[in-house]
Length: 371
Image 1 (cartoon, rainbow, N blue to C red):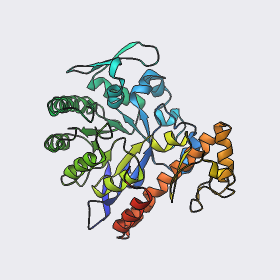
Image 2: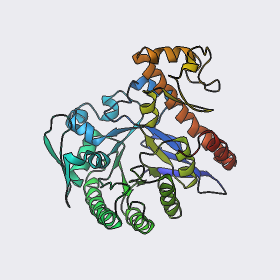
Image 3: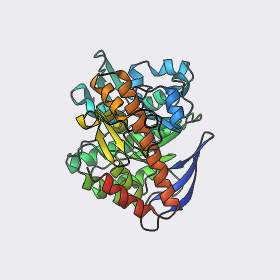
Image 4: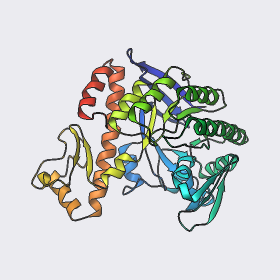
């Protein structure tokens, strides 16, 4: 089981700091987990991820299943060993990727039939099989297979989808407990933007034999206000002794709100994806390094940042690399953004422990207002 202990709470919200121990690795939450969809965080190598000291990295079951294949990863000793990464790993079930395929998939009561985005070949995911794939990949945390309805879906569709997700969860639990190994299973709360469905799903997932609670089906087209309503609805009934994971949500403003609603874990492609287009997160807000004003700026992009990019390179140099379309530009920008996300979480934990979370939240909401 995952060992978790609450170290501090905020008196004015549900925010908390916990100490978690998972397979011999101890870390504090709230925590951000970089996304390495295909066994890599784009442009970075695993040495840099270790250098950044991220405790958990995400891989994606759908993409790893297609290439190189879960059997190949298992033969290599599991995902972390395959990619030379020293931390823990978590695999998404592929439910969101299947949702996003749209014209390439067909969902039925037992699972999903889809075509590969690589060669068009046909494949089928069913709950027990998805657990088997993740078992081979060897992630420390695996996610139950779910259906992820779009944010604007009607209530009747969302209700039927949620019930299907619950049936699939039980199949995942049954398969998972045949052979736990070192792995842990998280169930996923669905229910769209409908409070009564979210409460029903929360009750079902939390009564199941799972090691952690994930909130799925957000950041898929609903408004920010609807997202906050869902998180607020769920915040009152989480079990104290299990981690809470908000899937695929990742701006500083989102983190502040979600942590205040009791969330412990986050992942998102945002810091690496936007870095490749020149967007950098700083302590004074986000910037676009491609803007002409940085052409002659012989200072770092963020004087308060201690990452190896800001302590060594000027904004002018980064601007030059992006203008020349050098690969190094993407690498340095990604490294900086992930460092920002890592230290942002550390500062947020400190504020909760010191009893200043509300001040911290207000300050950063001015720097990173509601998107």
